[in-house]
Structures are given as structure tokens and as C-alpha cells.
Image 1 (tube, rainbow, N blue to C red):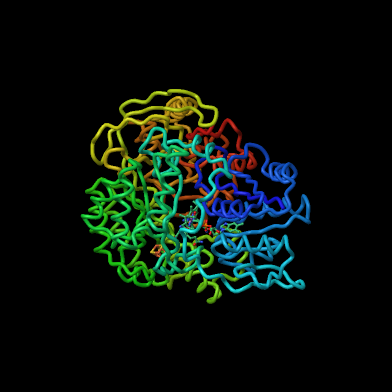
Image 2: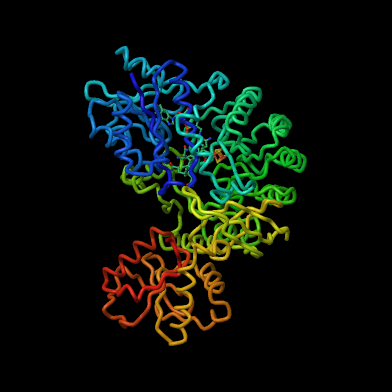
Length: 623
Ligand code: B12
Ligand code: SF4
């Protein structure tokens, strides 16, 4: 039997940074250990057509079984994989695992017309399952699978969690072209990649699951918290350093900080490797002594579960945390020059105008921590999802998953109040820029995979140090965030300032815009991206002339924004607006902080509405 493991594509374009598929790499390791022929296909490295690559991999390796996995968010990619396999040859056996299946087994299994599904941890189950497939054994005896018998979907009882995690082999990084993964990495790929000009980071995991049960969280590996011994873990690190010459590790434990003693021992042992590392912690697990030791051991960034600045909301989320602990921990973390990653999430069942405003006030007061603001999304499998289903708020679970488990009103607020909150949160979220001063920037080379690479020097707005970065690649969207190599706090940079060669077209467009302003041409802005961010970017383009910039129209397709006040006017919905009413000489300015996807779709939309191409001016540059 030849088995093909496929890692779905997580990002849109080849070369974009993605999280290495550690779970599938574990599956590969146990299969190889049991002597099976395993082949890998990492669609994140596919430069051509994904469907064709799948079929080619099946043909080339004479595959009989195709297995894949992922989270609910990967539904479209996973469906594409399964459909491609089945339409190529319906006799091929398909197996799916991961959070997408474990959180909604029957629904996903039947929708994707799978042969088998593996629930929760897959290492033991996959071996028994493959053995049963090959030797035609009774599937009813295999714990933790979903399968079909007599045309009926059968879900077997769950398997106990793997107690002795040390018995597992190290994940098989090779199967998904790990060298290519490492070679692709750039220091501004993700929020934690900045410490080195040549980051070489791999994910590891030292515990599974989490002892807490926060209402918005799901544990794809089951509910029982378990740990690896540190001896096992550091053999693993030895192997990664020796084989892949890594300089950083991302510790993917759901909650790394459960046991203080273990954490201190971990710090003592990792220090010798001179590696940088990051992990997820709770604010109530850290204190001055811990942070000092962790920092000295190479920890440079902590992902904290912050969630709310209202004690009532934290209680309702079952977070078992008090706001004063958050204040204390974040202040200490910053003091010890450790970066902070965290979110305030809005829309818990008891969220009200009073509680969300309290959280926002706290956030305003602590803007320098760069905490993200987001709306709660009821991910499949979480207690809030199950409640929303039981209460009839989510009626069609499959459509909900297909649409990406979007935020919804789970509160007692009216939809109008909820929308007001969501609008405020989204707008505020875009207004937390802390701009760094750029001292110099230079293009250093053109790389086939990475594009134009730059080096630049900036002054960190937090610690005022001059920091030099190299091997940086262009980021579109006007403004982007970067971590300081001295104090590890995040700041913002204007893309056009640090990647000047990639924004030459943009400079031409700014000159055009200034001329249009001189000629008093009527301008329309589309889409109406958050005011504060837009102001900042436009000011940096236009300098003193910014004060003369007047728009006649503001367009956006978000119905929640329709009619709301914006700069000196109100927002109009361009999807429903009758463009024949508009003066044919109006120039449409495409807002500078949009993604390439929105840019393309808005431009297409305008052209379809008979707006002439020469009347569309772009303040963003994607070419
Ligand atoms: C890396 C990661 C991601 C990556 C995933 C890509 C990847 N490379 O796997 C990315 C960045 C895409 C991601 C996205 C998100 N994530 Co995430 N992520 C993680 C993280 C940190 C590690 C995952 C991991 O490697 N686990 C370790 C391996 C061993 O476990 P595993 O992947 O689940 O694989 C095992 C089994 O699931 C199974 N299995 C998996 N695939 C297959 C395939 C086969 C064939 C078989 C047989 C078995 C099998 O066997 C594996 C070994 O036991 C986890 C935390 C954690 N420690 O699990 C959170 C976690 C999974 N993510 C979480 C969240 C909240 C998110 C996001 C919502 C974040 C956001 N706000 O956008 C999104 C979308 C999630 C969604 N709705 O589906 C939550 C839970 C998700 C949920 N449904 O509630 C977790 C648990 C973190 C947490 N505690 O809050 N995430
Ligand atoms: S949010 Fe954090 S503390 Fe809460 S259950 Fe999830 S991983 Fe554990």
C-alpha cells in the first residue's frame, strides 16, 4: 500500500509564510515507523495547478490511500483535495483528520464523502486503521474513527489520549520539504520572525491540550492535558539544531505555562542552545522572576490569552482570570523587553455596551502593548458554538463552516447594538499604529523566490534604539508591523518608505493626485478604510498638502458603514449606488491600505459600472 499525505495550502500565494503542518508530520512519522510507504505533497510549495500536482503525485507514486487534515478554516482547501482525488479515481481511499473533522465528525465526513475519518490524536488510530484496511479487519473495533458500514455512517467511541507522549517519534519534517520551508523564510514574514536577518524557525510541541475550558476555545487533541519529558523534548531540539541548523523555535503548546517548575527547568536547558523561542502563556502564570529567567533563556515573545478587560466577561468566558493580573503581567513583560502578542475578543454572551467600552478604554490606555482587537467567532467544537447551535442561532452548520465561522451576535445586545460594537472594534483596531522613524533604506538584491530584498535602519518608537534589518521583503497595504530587535515591542512602518523601489508607480500616482488637487478635480475614495489609518498614510504621501485634500464621495460596500459619518461626508454603498448619477470626470482613488484581492475586485466592479480606467487612480501598488 502506498500512502500519500497532502498538506493543504494555507496561504494564497507561493512564498507567503505559513505554519508548518506539524500534525500531519507526526502522522507521517508513525506510518514510516510502522514500515508503510509514505509520500508527501505540500501544496504550500506548489507553483502551478494544485489539482494537477495532486493527480501527478498519485500517478507517480502508485498511490492507493490519500490522507489529509486541517482545521475548520481549511474547509475549501480540504474539499478541493478530496474532490480532486475522487474525481481522478473513485477507488482511491480517502482519510481525513484534524480539528475540522474532530469538531463536527458526521457533518464533515458525510459532506466530503470520505472513506474514513480519524478523530482527535491520530498517531495510534491511523496505524490500526491502515492495518484494518490492508488486512480487511473489522472497523467496528477501532477506536476514534468514523466510517461507513451498510450505507450508514458509524462513529466509534473515542480513543484514550496518548498518555506517554515520549513514545511518539519526532515529526517527519522531511515529508513536506522542510529545507524549502526554511529557505523561504524572511524576517518580516510573521510577527515573530524579525530577530534574525536569516530566520530558520521550526515548530515543536512539548505538551498537548490544556487544563482550562475557556468557552471560545477548542482542543483538537482532546481534553486531557499531557506533557513530554524535557529529556525527550531536548533530544528533539538537538536533532533540529543538528539537522536543520535552526535559530528559533515556535513552541506550539496550547498553554505552555501550566507548570512553573517545568517552565524554569525548560528555560535552564534551552538557554545553552542560544536559540530564540516563543510560546503561549497565561498572564497569571508569570511573575518577575519567571520573566527574567525566561528572557535570559532566549524567550523573546509571549502570546498571552488576554481576551477582555472586564472581570464579568472574563468570568463568563470561564477564563479564570482577573484584569489586574493582566495589567501586572503585561507591564512586567514589557519591562523585561519581551514582546507581547494578545487579543481582546468582543462578543461574549454577556458582552454589553458597558463591558465592551470598558475593554476599549483599557486598550486605549495600553496602546503601546499593541493588543489586537477582534470579534468572537464561534469555532466548531467550542462551547459557544455548541450553545449557538442548541439555541438555534446557527441553523445550517455546514454553511456556517463553509463561510469560515464568521463572528455573530451571541450577546443580549440587539443586532443594531452588536453591529455598532463590531464597527467600533474594527475601526479602533486599525488605529493602533505606533510609527517608527526610517533613517535609511536600500534595495540589496532580487531573489527568485523572495522578490526584491531590502535593508533598512529605523528608530524604534518604544526604546529609541537605532535598529538595522536586512533581507526584508516588500509588504503591501500601506502600513505594516515589525518587532524591535532591542525591546521586542512592535511598531509600524510605511511600506513605501522602507521599500522605495517597489513603490515607483505609486510615486507617479501621488504626483498625479497632487495635480488633480491643484485643478480642483472631484475625488471619490473607495473603499472607506478606517479613518485614522488612512489619514496617516495619506499624510505621509502628501505631507503639508494633505490639508487641501477633499473628497466629494466616500464609497464602501460594507452595508454596516452605509450612511455613517466619515471625514467631511457620509459613506455610500457602491454595490447599490447608481453611478450614472455621478459626474463623469470624478476620479476614483483606490484606498492605500487594501489587500490585493480587494484591489482587484473593486477595480473590476468600477469598470463594470462603466467608470473609465483612466478615472481610477491607485494609491496602492501590487505589481
Ligand atoms: C499551527 C496552528 C494553526 C495553523 C494551522 C496550520 C497547520 N500548519 O496545522 C493556522 C495558522 C492556519 C491556524 C489557524 C487557526 N487557528 Co490554530 N493553532 C495552531 C496550533 C498553535 C498548533 C497546531 C498544531 O500543530 N498542533 C499540534 C499537532 C500535533 O496537532 P494537530 O495539528 O491537531 O494534529 C493532530 C490531530 O489533529 C490529528 N490530525 C491532524 N491532521 C491529521 C490528518 C490525518 C490524516 C490524521 C489521521 C490525523 C490528523 O493527528 C495529529 C497528531 O495527533 C494550535 C494549538 C495546538 N497546540 O494544537 C492552534 C489551534 C488549533 N488553533 C486555534 C485557533 C483558534 C485558530 C484560528 C481560529 C486562529 C484565528 N483567529 O484565525 C485559526 C482558524 C482555526 C479554524 N477555525 O479552523 C485553536 C483551536 C481551533 C478551533 N477550531 O477552535 C487552537 C487549538 C489554539 C487554541 N488553543 O486556541 N492555527
Ligand atoms: S484559551 Fe488558553 S487557557 Fe483557555 S482553554 Fe484555550 S488554551 Fe487553555
